[in-house]
Amino acid sequence: MKPGLFSFLVAGIATFTPVFAEDGNLSLAAATARALERHSSLQVFDAEKRLADAKVITALMRPNPELEFETEDVLGSGVYEGFDSAVYNLGISQLIEVGGKRRLRAEVAKSSREAEDLRFEAARREVILETARRFVGVLAAQDAEETAARNLAIAREAVQSVKGLQEGGRGSAIDVGQSELGLREAELLAESAKSRTALARQQLASLWRATKPDFSRASGSLGEPRGSSPSLDGLLETLDDHPLMALARSGIATARHELDLQERLRRPDLNLGIAWRQDTTVDDNAVVLNFSLPLPLWNRNEGGIAEAQAEIAKNEALVEQARQQLAAALGEALTRLEFARSQYRLIADEMLPGAAKQHEAVSEGFRLGRIGYLELLEARRALTLVRGQRIEALSSYHEARVEVEALTGTSL
Image (cartoon, rainbow, N blue to C red; front, side):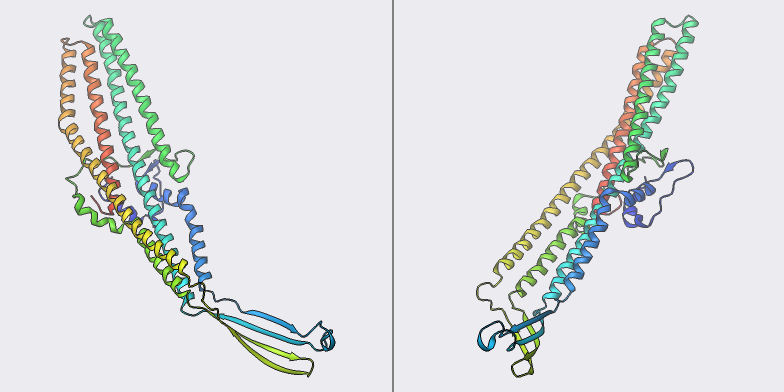
């Protein structure tokens, strides 16, 4: 896990082809590429984009002309009986939209289409973040499994050592029983660690809908925490580039286009027509010109305008809400990051060396026959506990780090 790797993935993972090494190792880049290709939450966006494209096409279409046929002075009485006095009108009419309504409808549709791209980018970034989190979980589980395996090897050696001391008259049956109990405990911890690793790999593979992991190991390691992180105030400005902020702002743009459209709808559209007229009573033909124009006496589209204005206010509030939510998430992530960093430093610099030194001293005392096996077992348990705490602190640090990088788009 190199610093800034998450930012690299956000920028360029879409063109990365996942490749697995012959030894079955899986890299973070390959895992992310697979998740982006097959994650179920991203599959729906292809259809959503096609739907938005279709709405743009529909918005750009002109109204269809209308074909009209009319017969007058028929089926009456007297001279109008039957069709002998019929007058036939055959014409075509076209609705002429004024005020740029078609252009504004297209702007609304295009703005909605752009919003789909932003929704996809936000979902894509969330998939990348979740993949990084689960990859960190696999690395931590692998470290814990390796630690448990080392403890198991030590416990087996201890059993052989205690049995040898007993055969030489320096040990006791109680020590042998305690050492065998310690071995059973180490075996249980090793099996538990192995199961947690298998579960972590399965959870990672489920991101690309695999029924079981097709890799044997996640490549990489949990590096030690770097220096101090940037301040919250220094990172808040980066939130404006987050896809969720851009999506919220796009809602304002769409609502403003809709307001423009609703205001233009107050202008009535003109309907023009031309027809061919045949009067059978005189056997003459003529051209008929007509037009119609709605009179906006009772409806000036006040409701549509008010609705669009309310939509603008709503989206402005959503922008502020998104900013506050992202800022709160960033603050929490930075707090977890600093806590994990300080916790790791305490464990790695003080607790782990102290526990290792104590275990070494107790082991030496046991070899010299000055200390019983029970004290050795307790020293080993304490060392195992501290090693596990070190892995947990390191895992928490890297999980918080990838979240900060996901929120800010910057490398730590």
